[in-house]
Structures are given as structure tokens and as C-alpha cells.
Length: 68
Image (cartoon, rainbow, N blue to C red):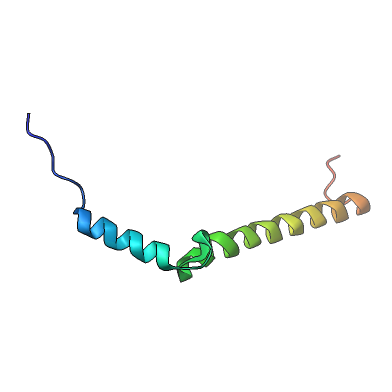
């Protein structure tokens, strides 16, 4: 059987490791796109769920949307 070569050259991996280890920010906020996935999406989900809960409580307290 023929063995496969490495997916990436070792030099490239070492270069990437050094780059990641040199950054002194939190792991999940290193790049601009990481802020979208780590901050914006959870805030949007929390905001929409709070809105829906508030609307449900309002509807229940005023008797709106009851089925006969």
C-alpha cells in the first residue's frame, strides 16, 4: 500500500502555530468574523427570544389570541 503524504507541509503548520500563539486576545475573538459568530448571533437570539416571551406574556395577560 502507498502511504499518503501529509495534508499540509510541516513548515506551514509550524508557521500557523507561531502566528496563533503570538496573538494575545481570547481564542474565540481573534479575527473580525469571530465576533459575528461569538457575539452578534447569540445577542440576536437572546433579543428575539426576550421579545417573543414578552409578547406572549402580554397576550396572556390581555386574553389575546385565545381559541374558543
